[in-house]
Amino acid sequence: MFDWLFAPTCPCDFAAKEWVEQRLELLSEEFPDNVFAERSLILPTPEFFPDAYDGSPESVRRLLNRVCDYMDVSAQVVRLATLAKKPDLRLTNEGGQVLPTGAAATYEEGEDCFVIRLDPQQFAEPMHLVGSMAHELAHVRLQGESRVMSDAFYNELLADLTVVFLGLGILLANAPGNWKSQNSTWPGSLLPSPAYLSPPMFGHALAHLGWFRESTKAALLKHLNWSARANFKQGLRYLESTGDSTFRPCGRGRRN
Image 1 (cartoon, rainbow, N blue to C red):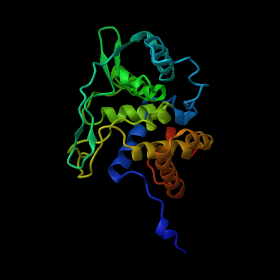
Image 2 (image 1 turned 180 degrees about the vertical axis):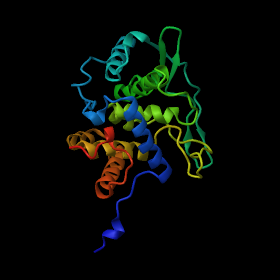
Image 3 (image 1 turned 90 degrees about the horizontal axis):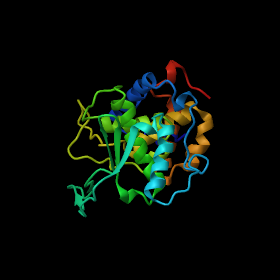
Image 4 (image 1 turned 90 degrees about the vertical axis):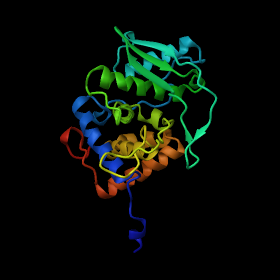
């Protein structure tokens, strides 16, 4: 009787929803071997990360090599470096939100390799570090392999979405980059756009995975943290109730 009061809603706004669905379609053309086509969903468990880790340079490199494997990047073409120490500053915008003072990791193309620089402050949290590694390796798969042209507007967003698409979305959704941006809107819209995928956008993207692959639901619910899980559950309820998405993996209908 009162179902209309609790109608399911998408966790992100219309512009973000449209962007996620359109880019999932783009990625399905670029990466036919993807998590929607039954690629392994990488979990933050010893099964997927069995190596001993103590935060030392050697253990960080071993972790990077494993993430390279999961992202289908040859570890031999990736050089690891560390970022310079960031200034101890706390900047906020007009709404009192803390703004980033520097990148957690960076990617650049060298003459014969790709250079991934990591913030040593992340070394104490290996699963958070995995998310940063996967994001930078997504740049290798996109810009480094000439799949997309560099675009200041969406290349960071697309790198995040590529991590989801290749199976490491849980690791990144649990520790998203500082997605808040200053005075940035979606093209042709007054709706604010994030610098990286926002938690609601992660929720909508991962909800597609739960919607198309029933077997992934339990793992997503178990391993997403409480905030990411809430957005995932909202997105999944919305998709299962409405079917409102333009994205269909490999041009097919819903998969079990």
